[in-house]
Length: 301
Image (cartoon, rainbow, N blue to C red; front, side, top):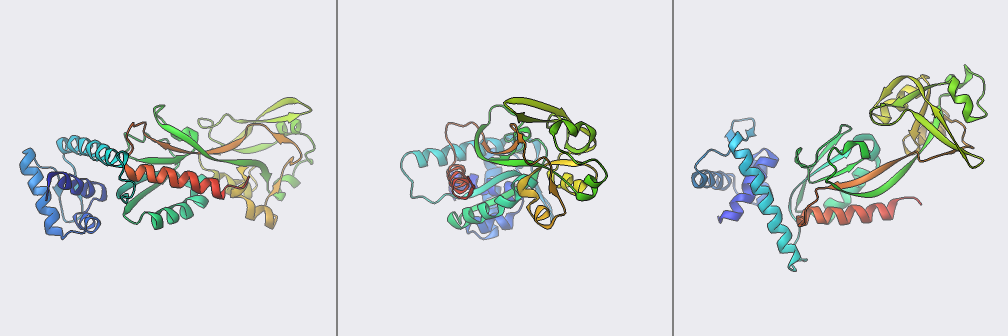
């Protein structure tokens, strides 16, 4: 096995955390993978992997070797793609992070389509609602909402803007006078997004002017799904993505509040993010192109 192929095998073992799975990805017998790693260790003069019966891990020095290995292989893949090997099928492990509730409805069909189009790419998908650093956390790409990105160096593309509405349970609304104007929201409780993520207020456009209402709340979270459940239980009005409450609106479990008034700049932006590199690996380029096309085809205008 040549040196570059050995580096690819080493990378797969690290990212898949398994000799057996790396062997499957590369179409090799497991002993061949072990021999490739042993040859690399002999060449660099140190142990690259801690092996146990349950897991594979990196010593500290090997972590630096892995990072350099990733850069070299990514640049090599991108260089090959740039010089005309467009017919070469993209492959390798693609590590993707996505916002759990904001993307779940779209993520499964997106990944299913992408996997069918690129069978040689292995996908490692992480769902989270916490901030991430794509480079430091080892992700190739993110499908995220704006607050999740901690680095300003990432390249971002807007994939979709999800409209939000005010909604509440009928039981909550029955306890208070009927709402007829946004100014009356000051008398109401909200279930809010965490103030560290979004300013706790809503703004309306009324007769050409802007009216901003601060939110009163006793419960807030970073999860739209959690907030929906609290709204369903009557803890206040929620500012929720319309796609997340369609079933509840249809059944009458939730009702729209002040639907006749225009909310200003209040939607959830779904963004595609990736590291700012001059040369993109073929697998990353393939996903960017596929995701952009998928959202253009499936977003309701």
